[in-house]
Length: 126
Image 1: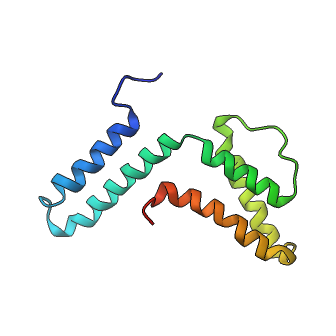
Image 2: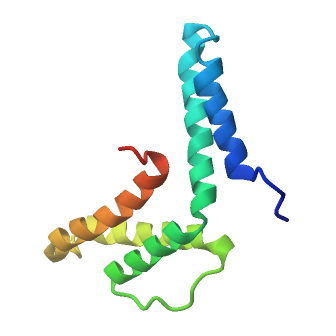
């Protein structure tokens, strides 16, 4: 069920802002790192909520393409992360085995898309 505003992402952003802008200077210095970690986690989860499953679906399509497989049936929303992890594991297995050595340049270039999507959530200013 969707709640009225503020939504979950907005609430997490507000917590992150409060931690950074107001509370950070009031906590003892030995606890500031933990506070910064908590604020960063709130911001990451907020960005994940806003993005929904679109980045995971894009990653799955990319990984399936790189693996040379048929995209097949699109997984349900609750299965998408597991499907991405499975495709990542298979790609890693093939890379370690040397099976994809003749395509390393292509794979590195294409996998940069995957990394960019992850950074958009984890560190958009990077």
